[in-house]
Amino acid sequence: MTRGHRLIFCLHTPMITGGRTCSRTAPASTIMVGAQAPALELSRPMDMSSREIRIPLNEAVAVLQDLNEFVVSLDQLGSRMALGTADEHTIGNFILDWDVPRRLARARWVISSALDEQLSREDNLEIDGLCEQGRFYADSAGSPSPDQSS
Image 1 (tube, rainbow, N blue to C red):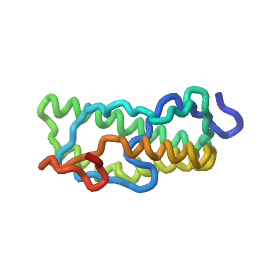
Image 2: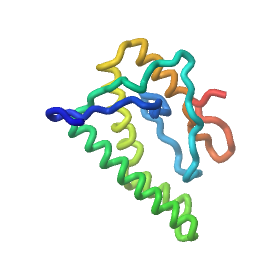
Image 3: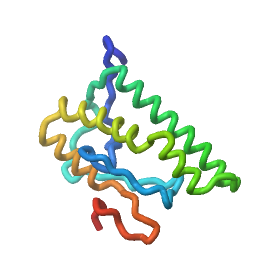
Image 4: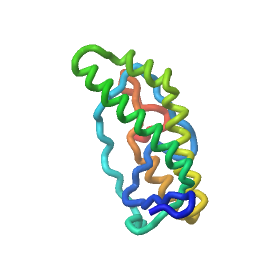
């Protein structure tokens, strides 16, 4: 699967959510652990099952390391919340102390850059549209964030 110092990622499903061009960070006042985003549907289906993009191996490994740390840490924090030994402040501290927003924005940038460089403008516009269909954080009062459509 690897060739030289590059790793090939297959685009099996549209997994990028929340936009690709700007960093969106949410306040840490209310966080839901274990929520699932709804499946995204294509208005004009782009065949993603056999399409590939290439990402330099060092970039792919850096993203994988960050994602692994976040997944394991959030799982452990979720377990602690279930046991009553952690609360939303603990998760907020994790997000701030571990620089989660910047690191996730960088992961998004790595994937976005590869898509932008290797796919057509039309394909990238379609992917951007999919990203805008994502579910975005709303504050505890229930009002949508400025970049969430109704």
